[in-house]
Length: 307
Length: 307
Image (cartoon, rainbow over all chains, first blue to last red; front, side, top):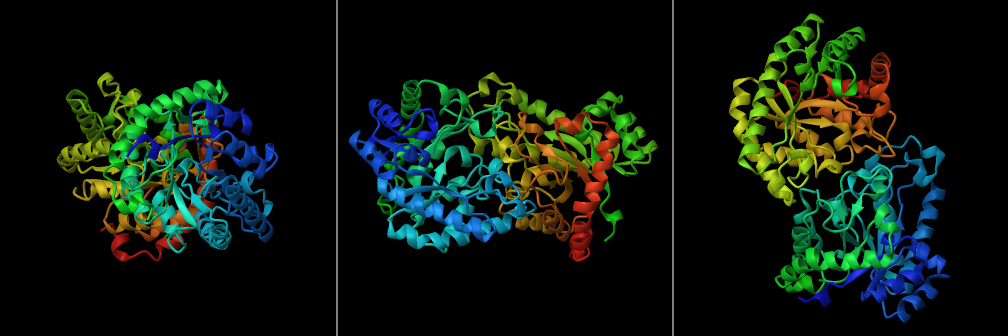
């Protein structure tokens, strides 16, 4: 395995002050080959086709599209709206040339700032919310398959279970995908979200064995937790995550492909993007890539082939 | 099952401005029968024997002692200090008349503000830290048994995995207890820490079946997460936890005994303790107790007997 098997990618959540063209230019100037844009940057660029052109003209490829999801609503109108939004996201992913639509599945209806449904305010039934995620995914599968796009479930750190994602572990995400085809529903390993999980090694291996390991995202877990808890992510090496182990397990599970850096952190988000990209490259080369390369060399052939 | 099977208890973490005597008086005045003190209140009262007298003279019983733990150090001196501190905590628990010493097992050595070891700064090996927890528990078991005290492992919310507890789920805590005797090592279900866990129902049942369900603590999970993340706990009903389900599952697993309310929350911690206790009683009677009583009536006899 060589560095070419694990190209570093910028997730545009790391550089929220840049529009798509600026983010693409910064990524290309830093010598990276992949970018994972958020949907609002596509809108800002004039739509997915214009965005695809901007990305391609800079010689880049899209690693993922962030994001679809928010599938936990109970009411028929909110459910229909969620499906419509996700179908649009599937089309956008296909248009910009990625097969990976990252999915943040949504929180409890009681967390009204997410779903906005006044009638849902009292619903704290997390098991019920998870069941609805499975139902909505099944409804989206045919559309995803038609467009050659995978719905890539992102288990989020349990600190976001109430308001953002009732999927908290890789094992749980894989359980939800079990009845659904692997060419349409997969998972992403994001180090921030899963590093603490006592089952993470086994579940990364399972994701690989089941052909559902679609993306690897890296950033660190900083302490103290930021006053805006969403922004507790850190540059690799600044926090408490053991990237050697997680990267080795991911490569051993057969993952090859772009490795995105997605950091929500007030200081990093507001500094010059060149600085951010330069530090990303250094830390990735030091803390992540060597462990992907070494372990990937020993990965099973079937997993490496994405089977 | 009646309310007497599930007496409400004040954990003194909820009223941090009160010394032991004040907390005992407020608890008794509110009509509660149990209190779960933190160790520093025993010190402030002149030691465990003096504390035991204060508690007994008010007609109260100690539900737990908070807390032992912090067992993840790598160096021999820090390990010896941790064992010595835990042996003292075991003696104190016995002296104040509780058989439950709550254990927060400790975080990564790299989180130096916990362990203080300069040489440990680079250690982010969470699996290694968990293994040391098991080793230290095994060393403490004979002393705990001699004193009739259980080491009650508290899986903490994963947001505290790096700096406070490398045990994040009930399943993981029960796995660690497996080689150790059930009369010496048990677990506590704290709603704040475990509500998000997709396996929580099964693991509460398992804790009961294995005779290791030693304590039930209730408080809510508030949003947004507080700027001091430790203080994100809320009064039952103010956040996003489904107390009906968790309480039913705990009683179905055979738990009877005190139900502690432990809330770290800047507003609640600084308001008048009478107000806090009055609200606790109301919310407990409304949101928690009915589900304990109803489900407990159907609990298996062997579990209800604590076997």
